[in-house]
Length: 180
Image (tube, rainbow, N blue to C red; front, side, top):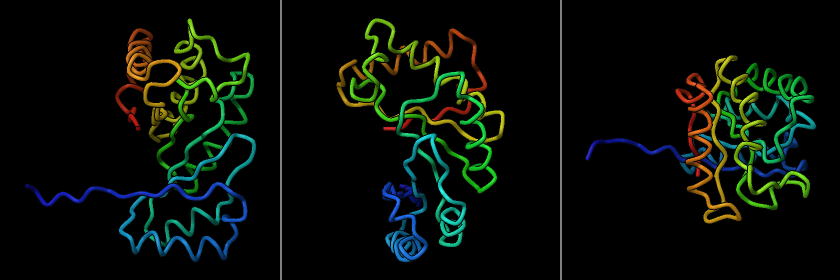
């Protein structure tokens, strides 16, 4: 077997108190000692994670990633999301996980859960962000899905990929990473 080293990553605390400089400077070296190369920050679209967090990640040789765990914004709120993405790329983030378990009913607001066209509803929110992420030179990551889920995970994945292909979004498909 080749001497391939698998990357190890950690999801960092999402509570604001763990984004205090003292906490970050304590935890990040510990992650690095455990062999981590990546750190994932879970957040929403309502406020940016402070730049200092990313500087500390880079100082500790950790590759920062962002996972937007909240519902992806509608088109009318795209500019706010684009502003955040631009800031994060400027601060060294190159990978963005878009949403968390969109095949789960609890990931959606009550009026957002439309079982019969859920994947298209998801893609309508995913595509503008993924396309913009590709345009700014970063990599979109398809959200992890709930195994089984309220909408079967493998069916959701298949329909999402077919939907991207049907819409001829080759730029997204060429850069897209799947997560689990």
